[in-house]
Length: 415
Image 1: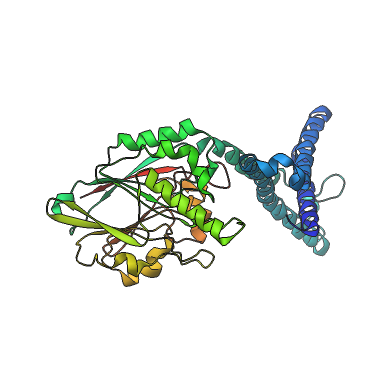
Image 2: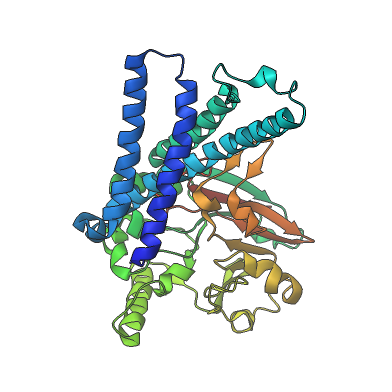
């Protein structure tokens, strides 16, 4: 829980922002009837006061402490309201700076500012900028609410990969990659099962999972073991761990309890028939030809994430295998260690970023705030003959939805 001082500062900031945005609401509703303005003003302040009370009472509402899912929805709505008003406020601030300049010009050159004065002698607020700010802020809030319905809207991404050094027997290999299940966030088992059915319809030769099966605790997966156990492929299902799988974001009673949680999670991988690769590799054969699948524990170049992975240990013994696929949860591993030290790793598969579950993707634009932190954050990247694919994630965490960046099932076709 935050300190009382910080809590009250947040409330004051929210109230001042509410009041600032209200000035624009007054401006755009100035020409409406008294009755209409009463409904607009009443609705605005009912919503704003409800948000303030929710923040004030957040630590004391029992259901918010016991239901993580409900808490995430409430937090997402409150954060959406706040940032929507910040976006809107940026337009109003621009308008106020414009008015300040006109005011200053009017003092220096009295005839200059006359045309911008209202009948009361004040400088008029721009109704256009007020509408624009409200439209952008309201649009952001609306998309965040709409995004709640997208969290199970699984998208199949088909990626064709051409490698001259791929053994002939493996030409035409089809693999499916999923990542970042975050089963602790799921609320709809039937919807998740539909995603699994979409994978099975692809009839892949191989299935790869690149980490974050749970948010924190192994028991989050218990309800979904039967669903994910359906994932089978002729050449096997191979998995690795992500940063959330270690339980690092929970206050455990002891180190032993934390380690027991991890061991139980490893057991769930085995129970589902998945081959969990812990700093090791396996060799796959077709005819007399071979490829290697290397899997390491979480390794990140970002300081706040741990480096459990031991690439040298996982790689050892695969030197003579002509084609190598690496499963490594965090894409920052690629440029930090794989490219400079392991130039014969042909393909690295990652996840982790989720594309921040928010962004824009079209044939003309690809953008998400997460790109300010991760250079490789979604899709296919190349460096020489080496390639990296970053899966956008099968599940979700924190914000219980997706805007623009939808949950992904990657189908990799090798040639």
